Image: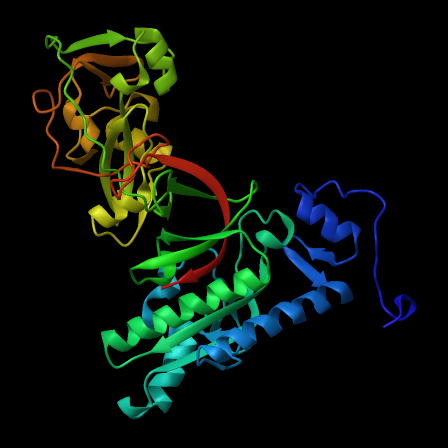
Length: 412
């Protein structure tokens, strides 16, 4: 087609809201045009590119024995209520009502619809295994759309759903899908890795994500420098060992600490390392408040908290809830002499701390000489923190390093 017969709206200047290179180039070259925040029109050049990508996908999916299907974007609330995800999916689910007051959702995913179809139409196990896939628009009400097409409210996505009579069949198709995706990404020239991941709102287990390595990736990949181990940082297990400090135990002492709230503040005030401080965070876990403890140089992994407590929902408690519950601000929380009956869970590293520093549950005061087991009790010690660079690799080979990645495909 001649250029005079198409539409390529190029730009001379980089738009102010285009933060990253790919977004800038797509706008300046006339591939896309923003219609609203997180919503884009794919111009002729982008549509030609999409068609070529979809052709590759369809070829590889056909080789893997999958059949293409097109499902409705508008999905009745009843299907989501039946699966239990109408309430649990969260604010990203775009909900609406028709003129008769019936509730619907703009599909962010299609598990409910495809399961309903197969349940109604498949009458014999002899028709299994069956793999259906689709390529169409999805909707998610992103709180902060950014990076152009990488984090939008409306986007084109391919996903596949397989149904089986037994585990052996599932494993066989899983391997076929794995091969299909590696072929797709290789043919597209992507530098990618398959990593262990959390299944999130979709559910399930044994999940792998395909990540494209990129400096602007929103996901952190933890990988071994001596093996093929790779995982999303939220799923990487910590297999480190800890040693109890060989020093005399000090008495528990309450000290005034005016305007000292963060771990860094307290570390500087007492002239101790951050790893000698106990970080105490209140989480709301299925409507119950739980105190989670990690070492001051570590960060709480809420995905691990959710799995350890076998919870449906986990969220950091609001400041107002903490003040009402404990009578102090979040910067003064600690596990010693809690004013309320709160269950305490702690990361393994906390168990080996000696003469630690923690909040005194009173604004402007902290304890020193804190000893777990003597000054407070923990209901359960578990792996509750994010892995760190330099930690031993969970597979026992080498140490962990980090890289940034963009999720291009979940595989459950």
